[in-house]
Image (tube, rainbow, N blue to C red):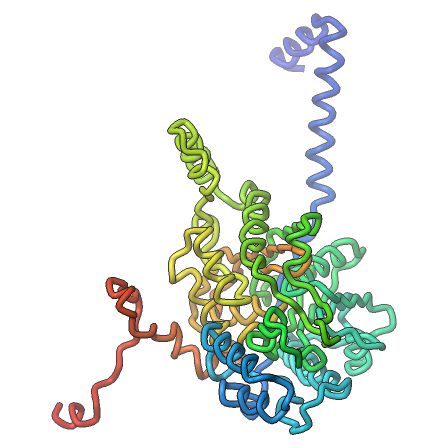
Length: 478
């Protein structure tokens, strides 16, 4: 034994017993904690690949199609038609979104058969594309999570996928319903947890969609008509794995997930509710309180997330700014302050459920136009596709070739109830668009050119505009 070690031992022996026992206990607890973290460390989970559904061009739904359907159905009053036309023009949706098949059937009736057709077209397409390009056989999938908020048939959507792709008998399947637009991020969190509790590494398939065929509203309640104007067809599938050998093939690593539920508050719970109107018509009512609830829920959500993702320097800066505002006698300004999350993430897939929601998130988080550009572009091109929104935004980043190895990415989605869910990813390699990227062929058109400012906003100058080619006559002169 060296002299230094002997000195330490003699010093410990000289300590009184009431001091020695807590000291030894603390040392043992420290050693056990370190060993537990080393030996029981969770296996990392990777996003191997994902796929988004791009329906056929014949399913595109512009304002003219909506007006024709509303007129021929004979279900709406002139006042209702004017209201939906106004909502559509203010919604932020473009002229190339996709509608469910029954809109084009000429029957003007929502049936179970149309709902099944819509589900199969989206789910089967994205799963087939994803498994093919990921080099994974359907029988290799050990966990299956399928989420659709408004359509829950029997057998379930998960059973439909198991039957179609002949998955193995012991696949762990889960069907999520009623989760709203947050189901995509919730599904990733659930699948990752299911993988980590398995003894052996495996694959988890997360499939998310929304079904509007049986949920089209034919009444005249204005709160329930909004869903007709903003919700559109869309599906996505993601394949995550904890197989160490597939890290080299994966695109992203899942760093953290967070789910917060604010349903204990009555206003949050009733912000978006499926209900019957006074005539017995079923639909989803989006109240005027939804935007305020989204802002309050987001503030509570980021307060929980911030300590885990923000650098220490930004946390200290935030504490200093809040303390300075309080000391200056301005508690309202202190309460309105939020940390700068752009210090934590290079890319953000913000919930693009509607123009007002995007505006609220941008205002609350002090995000500039470039940060919410993917959200606005996704809403314009595909509409509100519910739980698959964040994957269409991720595809936008890849179509623009903006993601670089090591970049951190934040997926944030809101759902009915009211709930918020975050997925935090780290890019493992530079991303490029896949052959089935839904933005192939249209990404160059975004960000869309801003409209001409009104006189009231005459001083506003768009930060980014596309260069337009000169007229043909000028080209000939040149």
